[in-house]
Image (tube, rainbow, N blue to C red):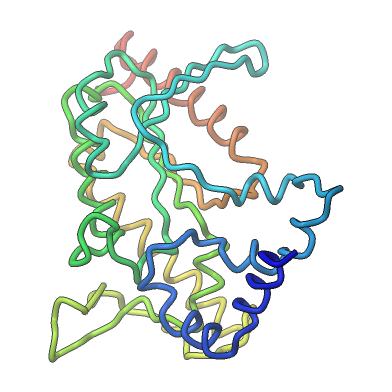
Length: 260
């Protein structure tokens, strides 16, 4: 109880909450911290059982290469999960062969955050460079690309308090996405207002286009894009549908009915 009371008192501290609201995009902490802190009373109950939401908001950083296989609608899927952090890439970038599809997760809510490994690099800029490297790697020439613009719920949550485009003339390193044309979301704009929705949709479209532009072979390599979040239970259906399309496309190329 002492630990619980101390944590609750800390989270309810006015100074801490003010600092959290102003600077949380600068901190290297789990993005669902507020969700878990608000449920502290529940977590300390002896009868507490994690809900599906609790599990889905929990994060474990992927290290190494993790293989999972399952059967869906009579089709066997084999998925290799790899970490995207810089120190993880050397473990997997050259080990794949004959894959049908690449699934790339890009957290679009991280447009105002820096890398854990390098505080000078914007996380989405890093994701764009990695996507370009992987998407155009000769080892994956025959693999389809499935792009998940992930954490759309967190993107929506921060849009009215942290702008996509930011220009710092005194310290240009702090500037980001200066080519974003808007429409922009005013600070404090109510969520789901017309202005907010237009800015939200423009932001999603902007980041999608930034990734798609990194595909050097658009005429021969398709990108299947899906805006999603961890709570989206339709993700697997999208992957299944995209994989079927990729396999069909490869078969048509093989028999000469589609340009490869």
